Length: 127
Image (tube, rainbow, N blue to C red; front, side, top):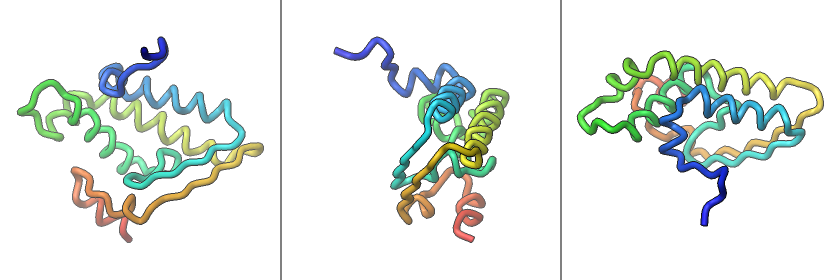
């Protein structure tokens, strides 16, 4: 039996990145201490706009209904939602500078080397 508040990630992605990111921002606002371990991606609080955008395009592409669509097609089709999600994610990242909150991040080296759909982004991360 699933919780009435549980929604598969596929369904959340279809609701839009802005919705997902807003929920995570509100969770961060209501928290005083956040611990985050990531083995394959950079934590959302620490992402650049370019990295966040690439992750959101990949997510939309992975759960898109048209198997012939490319990441570029998805980026164009969902441009406004992805940009709104990037704005929300970057706003969440600013919360790490607020007084009264503690953040602990443990990031595996593999997260720095994880291949995204944008090759130039990978090179920028490794610099």
